[in-house]
Image (tube, rainbow, N blue to C red; front, side):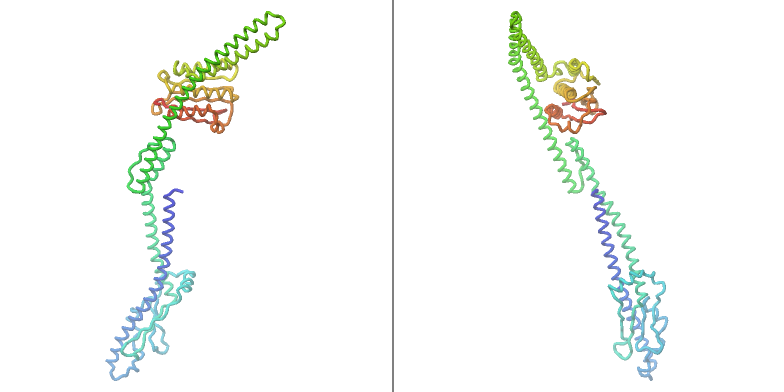
Amino acid sequence: MRLVLQLVARLLVIVILCLGGATVWATIDAYQSVDRATAASAERVSQALEALYWRELLLRGNRTREHLLPLPEWRTTQTMSLISPGVCVQFEPKGEFENPLCGQSKGIGASPPHWFAAAVETFLGGHAAVARPISARSVTAGTVSAIADPDAAISLAWQHILDNVHVALLMAVAIALLASLAIAHALAPAQSIVAALQRMAHGQYRTSLPRFRSMELAMIGQAVSELGDRLAQAREERALLTRRLLEIRSDERRVLARELHDEFGQNLSAILAFANTIEAASAKQQDRGDVAQDARMISQATLHIMACLRGTLNRLRHPPAEELGLEASLINLVDSWRSQNATQPMIQLDLKGDFADVRGTVAATAYRVAQECLTNSLRHGAAREIVLRIERRTGVENALLVRVEDDGGGDAAKVAQSAGFGLIGVRERVTALGGSLSIARARRGLSVAAMIPLAA
C-alpha cells in the first residue's frame, strides 16, 4: 500500500475518533445546557415574581403577607417569556387546580431516535428540579421550582447534538481533504527518489536528484546520490580489475599455447615420425604385419591428437578478430563450423552495419561471445538451425549486439544459472566492458544476446 494512502487512512481514523469524541462532548454539553436553561428559567422567574411580590405588598398595605400568597396574576405572557423552551415552572405554595407554567416546546427540535433517548437516560440520568426563593429577605414569600420536560429536554439535546455534529463533520471533511492534499504534496518528492532507485537497480548509478525542501527528504536524496556514486565507483573499479584479469588470462593463454606448441607439438611430430618409420620397416618384413598395423594405429591416434591440439591452440591464441577484423573473422568462424558439420545444423550469419572500425577489445569480445555460443549450440543442443546475428547500433545506444539463436530447445533458466566456465568467461568479458548478457527463451530454442558498448 502506498505511503500516501496509509497516511490518509490513518488521518481518517484520527478524524473519525475526533468526531466520535466531539459527539460525546456535544451530548454531555447538550445535557448540561438543559440544566443550565432550567436554572436560568428559575432565576429569571423568581426575580420577576419578587418584584411583583413587593409591589403587591406595598400597594395593599392593609393585607398581611399570608393573604398575598399565591401571588395574583403571576401566570402572564411576560412570565412565559422568561421560561426557556422545554422548561416548566411551578410556584410554591401553589393554588388549587394550578398546573405548571411551561415554555414553548413545539418545534424546538426533531424527534430523537429511541436508542438516543434510552442511551441518554441510561448514562446521564434525568434532570433535577431547581428551586429559587422569591425573596431572600422574606422566607414566607414562596419559591419558584423549575424542571425540564423530559421529552422536550431530549429533543433539545438531540437538536443541539445535530447542530454541533454537522459543524464538526464539515470541519472533519475539510481537514481530512486539506491534510490529504498537504500529505500528498509533501510526499511527492518520494516518487523522484523511488524512480532514482529504480534507475540504479538497472545500472544507472549516477542519478541526479532535485533539491528537496523537506530536511528529511533532502537527507534521503543526498544518501541516495552518495550511494549511487559509490556503486558507480565500485563498478568502475570492478571493471578495471576484470579487464586486468582478462589481460592476465590472455597472457597465460598465449604462454600455454606456446608451451603446448613447442612441447606437445614437437613430441607428437616425433611420435608420428617414429610410427611411420616402424610401419615402413615392418611392411618390408612379411612376418611383421601386426607391428605395421600397430604402428599405423599409433600414427592415426597421433594425427587425431594433433588435430585436437591445433583446435585448442586456435582457441588459446588471440582471436583472429584482432588481426583480420570482426567481419572477416566471423565469416571464417562460421565457415569452419560449416566445414566440420556438413549436414546439420545449418548455420546462418546475419551482419547489420559497418564493422570496419570495430577493433581491439570490443572485436575480440564479440568474437569470443559468438564462438562460445556457437560451440554450446553445436555441442550441447540438438539444433537444426543456428542464427548468428551481429548488429551495430548507432545513436544513443552506440553498441554492438551479438545474438545467437537456435531451435534445439533447452531451459533458459537452467542455462542462465549454469556454472560452466564458457558462459562465466563470456559474462565476465562483456561485463568488464560495461555491457550485458541475457539468456532467454526463443521461439523453438534459446537466445543468447550480448550488448557490448562501442565506447568501451
